[in-house]
Image (cartoon, rainbow, N blue to C red; front, side):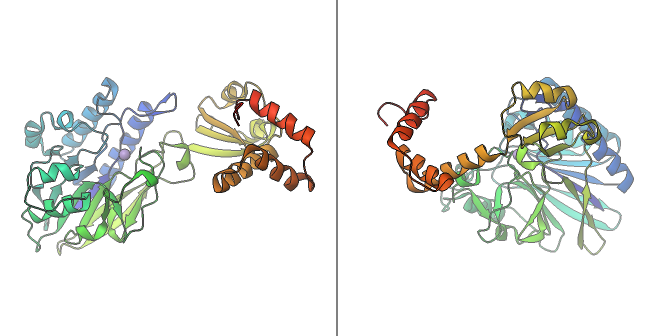
Length: 385
Ligand SMILES: [Mn+2]
């Protein structure tokens, strides 16, 4: 039996001003081709199906056609909601869809929904745990001590009847750590690691009873704690910070002895999202331009800012997403910023230090007065500073 693990589709997402719906359609078509090629029996979708709780028509149509294509192939679908989805909207029609072997769990009802799947000699039980918070589980079990998301998931598992002799597969959408070690964020999750409270972190060990855990929430593909507990990652790069990553999708095979094996398959997008670095002249030189339809993040090493640089770039690379500079000025600024945050120095002290670092001698009274005036005009400091 073969299962394909997907997550964080974020249908309807924009990359800055660029609507990604055509790229999403393309990648779902690639996934359907992969399903045909590998004779996949079931697809697991681990939440954040849509980018927003109130998805647009194009996103709804895209999910509709993807599910229809799966159903037409007799591929079973198991889908949960993530933190970006509206539970009730995603749950719409779910009991009707079950007749087509499309299983959706978007609303937590006290125990974890599960469905058996048997293909040839291989059998598995698929558990669907939608994104839950501590309060949602506390509501069902007021007598239990539930303070953290980990408590919530543990209690939900404890109250669900699980036959350990079977091959048990869980689909979940949570922030899962390996013994306190955070997963590597893609950057487009809508959560910053420093904002994730200890309350929300869940240790991968709560999933020890499961033979495979199909996770959603983190957009970089990776395992957490052991290779059978895994984030599929998003199928496309959804953030500038993901330009250097690669998108893969886990294909899980379960044999007749219930043994699980995992293969990571690379996804090739219609347009990649790439980071290029150099002077504008180098980057836009004909011989250096390749795949001009790709999404581009350009870092310019030119010493002076170039006016209207975005429109110049977009004549060659129409899908330029971001342009920044890496030159002596930006590096100096970065140094000042670091010094400033570390020591909370005054403006005068920062400028004096910086001056000394660059020129090797102290800044004069006249020069510092000039710097103060410029900084005030630029809005960096105010009269009171
Ligand atoms: Mn997500």
